[in-house]
Image (tube, rainbow, N blue to C red; front, top):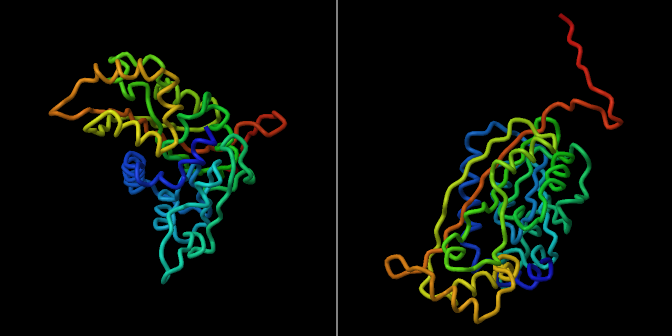
Length: 270
């Protein structure tokens, strides 16, 4: 899907309604977290809304913007300085844009105090390697916070016969994988968010602009999609598209074993 995301970079912002809303709700959760990170990272940053929010909240932290589609980084939302557009990291020289895959981060172990990821993890066939890599780059006491799509996403299209839609993991399975990756105290919850469309092609246009149409909807032929759309039930005259949003956060605790496998035992003087 890297090529699809790359091609969508220029039009992504116009369709990223869901990502902006989940990002806002993730940020609200940080209000209840006591954290003073030295380094923060938005993993799968797209055009940079998340890293801007982290910069606002943690102005003393070194911010990293990571995405595996280089054009997303290159076309991060621009601001105008006179008549000359400037990338947001040009106005924030401390910000580091990094083109990288979450499963192989070019970040030192224990470097991050906060890792943030908004609506990226569900595009991985298996999130466990990503969880292990994020756990590696977090410092002890560091926080991993994310939002991802859950299995009831677009259930109205599934009910209408869209059998090739991408499957998404259950939040309980994600919690188990966080534990398997070495995280402590994972907290998972979910909610349903609904977008509405006047016509099916408006929905398809959004998915194309986001770079996810084929990855989300699969490879059904147009004749099959016409049948699906004809069975898509309207509500109050509009077509509902419901997205199950799974939120998770977990902490990196003290290691129980050294890198060579030996157990770590802490002794305290009484």
